[in-house]
Length: 100
Image 1: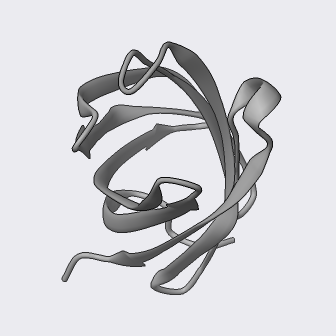
Image 2: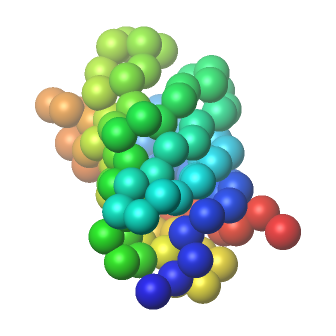
Image 3: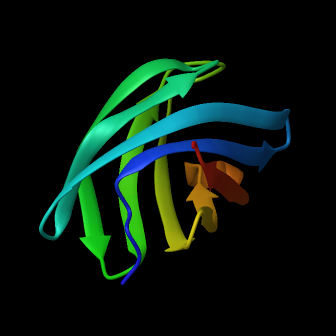
């Protein structure tokens, strides 16, 4: 099982170009809290789940239009890799690297 706690520099490859944000993860058993902060502003994560090396969470964003993002990513060492589902707009890759 990978150590999931920490700060992660993340990028989502969306149709609007690369969207970068800092993901903060603080795990507690099979859940985690934290935040995502970037161009979308700061969003608290209060429904994060941890399943082994995999994180899943949702974020409600209002820019450029209101949508709920469903995120799922796997941690391998100091890298993060997964998908972000943006409602009717489809799914997009998310990658990240642990902040030293």
